Length: 202
Image (cartoon, rainbow, N blue to C red):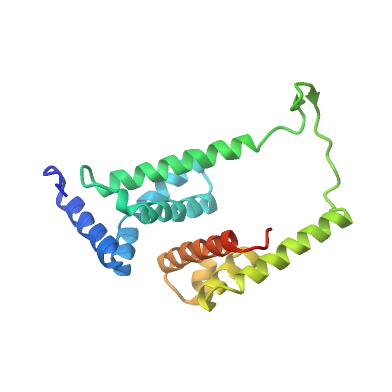
């Protein structure tokens, strides 16, 4: 593949790492690509969403999407340009979805039939049926998580069942923050694959 002669030394090094990741499934190459850009991606996303946890999740998602589609990257331009574009587009989608799901409880809004509807605020207490459904979802989720390898299972449990932050998980497991984020991305990917192939639906 022809490489753009205008690429900087840094961009050429990135391309070597990309090739190592694709051709040799080199985990170290993936890790180095992530460590080179995770901070700058995170701070860019933090400016866009103004929420640390969302920025953390979106950073992992950006690398996840980039690594999944790494074979589509071409050295016509720098890897960093391609990565930042993925991160930005993913973040814009996230913001759009968030806005779509947010509306004021004080205003009427248009229903599916074109008529005006107001929001009827129900008690925050779940009714018995909802409680049962929530309990069942959690039970199924635990069953699926149990199928993961122990280290990935522990990460998912700490993040989603115990609701710990990335920093708290890193302290708990005595792992570097970057390792926690990278492994949590893989754990979520495995979880998604299991859920997708499972006959049990949440």
